[in-house]
Image (cartoon, rainbow, N blue to C red):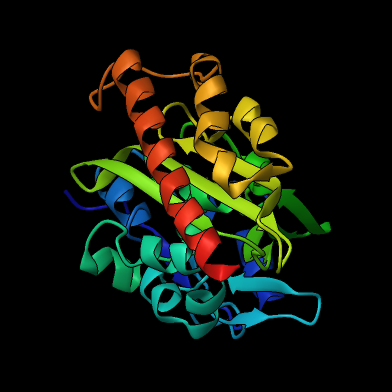
Length: 290
């Protein structure tokens, strides 16, 4: 099926792109288009104008800043992120995740920004970025604002981004401990995914804080607060019993949708299995780095 007719613009600056889209909701930003064009062909989404941001410089850079934060431009493809030396050194789990997103065509063309803005519940990056405590930089006609990854997705296929706001960058603190990610796939998308990030002192075997997110269960990634609290100030050697003591309670608090990927009880069980596998990997990596 062909898309409905639309016009096409190629601005060369962020300001021009924002002006071209406006606030009417009748124009949309376009980069990789792996999700957007498919939805337009299926007539699920209609827009009168696409604003191509591929010619805007600076949106495809990845840097470690002087503030010890990693910045990823929203136009970076999954392939670009997977191969980047900064990501491979400081957040290898994110590199591996991006190297396994969907299929080779999507990885080569699809962008991290497009993935996030589409708001697909069964996606890989949102869960990882929430665990990394990432902030998303949105620039619109009224200025720039930062939105935490936890708060970006409002509901299925809906985010807090306004129509005229361009997601320009993803920023997160350089990890100081193991970061792990596991998923159980149904086709090209995860049925359940779990990401875990620990912060640790360089010479200590104690976890300062932990962030755990479970995704693909509802409309957006969810924290396992009881597990995070159980891991705080915990020695690496005590991680598994600490998790097992609160895991059932934590999983019961998850909001889970029954869908073609499985029933709630099945997904809850998978989330627990993936979490414990993440913990085993994190323990191994944490011990090696001490």
